[in-house]
Length: 276
DNA sequence: AAACATTCCTGCACGC
DNA sequence: TGCGTGCAGGAATGTT
Image 1 (spheres, rainbow, N blue to C red):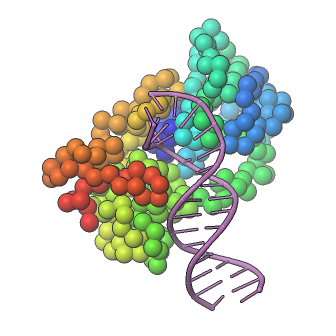
Image 2: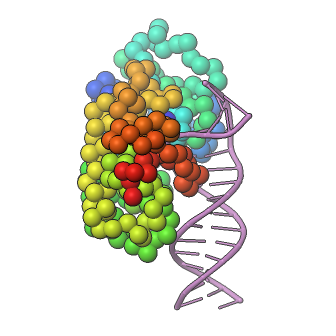
C-alpha cells in the first residue's frame, strides 16, 4: 500500500488515539511476513505502553515503554486498522488479518497484509539504532534532502533518474506513484539518465519532492487500489494525481497524451511534451 | 489475466 | 586474480 504520505497520514491518525495506550495481549495468526514473527512476539509486547509514534521513510515506529520499539512496514498491500471496542473489532478477515494487538481501553489494532511483503519487528532500543532496515536510509524529504545531495547522488550514474528517486538511500520515502508525480512537476522524463540531469533540473526535483509529498499528506495519501487509513477511510489524493495511471489521457498542462513506460520494471507515466 | 502503493538478493560486466 | 560497485532482473505473494 504505502509510500511516505500514506504512512505519515496513518501515523498522525493513530497518534491521536494510541498515545498512552498499553498493549495487553497480542495474537499472531500468521507469522510469515517478510521475515517470520518470532514465537515470543506476544510475550515481548504485552504490558508495554505506547509513548510515541514516529515515522522514518515508509516505516512506522512505535516507541514503547521499557526501552523497546516496534517497527512496522506495510509492504505493497499491508494496512493497520485501529478499531474501537472488541465488539466492532470483527469480523476479522480469516486469511489476511495476521496480527491482532489488544489495548487496555478495549480497542484493537489489526495488521492485515494479503501479500505479506510487510514487516513487524520488536527491538530493544540499544539494537534499534543499528536496525538493518533503517541504517542505509537516506535523508527525509522534509529534513536533510537537498539539491546538493541529489546532485552528488546523480553524478556519473547511468540509471534512470526515476530509479534514483525511488532509491531509499538517496531520499527516503518516495515510491512508484510519487516518483512519477514529482518528475512530471519537475518537467524531467523518468527515463533520463541520472547523470545527464542538469543542475537546474536537480534543483527543481529537490524543491518539488517535499511539496508533492506534503500535499499528499494533506489529503491523507493516495488510495489507488486498496490503501485505507486506520479508520478504513480512503486517501483523497488519487483525484489530484497528475500523471500516475493516466496513460492515454490528456496532459493537464498541454493536452498531449500521457505516455506509459516501464522503468526499472515499474510502470511510469509522463508527458513527452512537458517533460524533457 | 497481466499488473501491482516494496524490498531484497543474485549474477554479470567492468575497473583497479 | 580478487574485490568492489553499478545495474538489470527476478523473487517473495494474493488480488483484481
